[in-house]
Length: 340
Image (cartoon, rainbow, N blue to C red):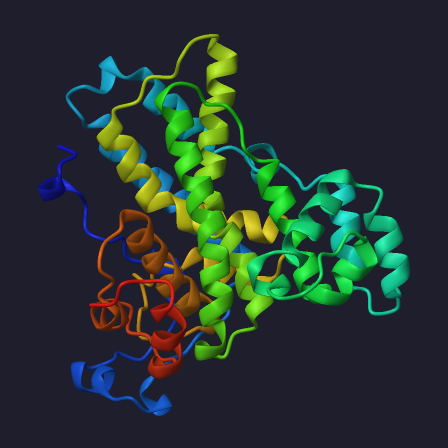
């Protein structure tokens, strides 16, 4: 039932949540002018909560009809766990992280004051110095050992990205067994996608540091799902048993809207939430959303690089119906990928 032939097609938007969006013809999609691209309409937090519930209801209904329903009781329990109140299924950011992000967004705070406050958190200090001395910022420059110097080098936006990265790291749990391997793979993918997103962001008119930060979070919905598996494992005091094919299907359909819910829960704003919630560009792929388009290309590039395959730039660009600067994006990725 869960093989490729039997998987449900990409979900349509619930009728109550469909925005009035013009239809895009094939000829319009082939045009390269900005006029042929639909502008993204901002979505409220409620949209993503309702969409998450919609997907869960569909998963629940399909599973209840499955002939092996009684054989895998943990499936139904995981669905119920994920359907709980947002404040229960999504961990709030630690108070220190919330304070750090507030400081980064406060233009009245001086760089020296920001450095003093962030220096109190060893994990943030480590992250800031790692970014400042990394290949992107530190190539050919003297090594930095001070927090204030690190902030001067990477900027406030880069500092905010480091804060977000430390928050995501705190979401990593231990669901046990094969799920630990899957969780580590997701985390590695997110970490590797960040630098690629920062690299190609200008080609889509997106802010590089914002793209970097959101790329570090783009699959956070998957982390929440594994966190719920971990919670279930603790409650049952045994390993959680889920059909691998079902789990893959559930992750595929749920991680985008659930990730957008996380972004709103953490106060990252609707732009970030919409980018995370639509980074596979399935529902309205012809729309113009610089961050979502950046994430789509960066994620595809990371998957290809990790597999050691040849990157089909033109094929990926067409698949995502991307609207950025192809020359700039291709040139930025050429140094990191084997292009077709």
